[in-house]
Amino acid sequence: MKKQYYYYLTLLNLGTLCISTSGPLGRFIPLPPPLIIWFRAFIAFLFLGVYCFCRKEDIKKGFLKNTNTMIFSGTLLTLHWVTYFFALQWSGVAVGMLSLFTFPIITVFLEPFFFKTKLYPIHLLFGVLIFIGIYMLIPAFDFETEQTKGLIMGILSAIAYSLRNLIIKKRIQKINGSLLMFYQMGITIIILLPVFIIYPLENFVSQIPNLLILGLVTTAIGHTLFLNSLSYFSVATASIMNSIQPIFGILIAFFFLNEIPPKESIIGGGIILITVVVESLRSRKV
Image 1 (cartoon, helix red, strand yellow):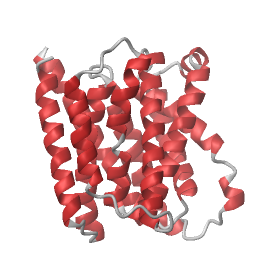
Image 2: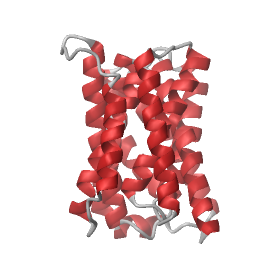
Image 3: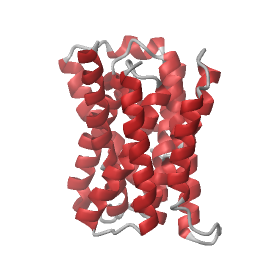
């Protein structure tokens, strides 16, 4: 039992580290978010397709059995990514990532509607602590400022992400994370095809290395590991433990983008980190 716990905890943490690179990359890549997301999905789609082919996955059968769920969850994932990258570009890595991480609170409240689970007081406490950590980063609420717009986009992204994870957990249980992400990348590619009519492809060639990292490391590897961890942890537990992601993202942005977070971000991030450690220890005993 302990070996299984440590195995899935390792998957969750490695997936979190990979996914956390999306914050700095989303801030750094000078392309419109819908274009970034299309190329991100396309690159991940190619890598995951090769991987699933080598594993001899029955690609057609898995999709036909879960068509409606795949389309709906893939649409939510697309919405989550596009709004998230707008949040990063408008408000910076710290505000963008931490505003997204209202999703553990949202998940805690939504999970009882999807599963026969109770709303435990300890999860409410963790949710409140994370909210306090995020609240310390919120600027004066003014629709004219980019930080406020970024905050709103981050919260919309959090809602979409939470719903997507819950739907996958409830409806899809016998498809591995790689194949699941392969399907969803295909759906994202189709949904965002019109972006080529709206946005010009300026600076695209120079950003190919960054887009490759985003598509392979952040998306294909990171999200596959995270989805596989959901087979062991509840969505609420994984979401709260995954809240260490903004810490990783802010540190990466500090070292590579020289983006220094304000004092409030450091304090808020500390609250989030403590909450994650406590939840990790608590879930070990379950």
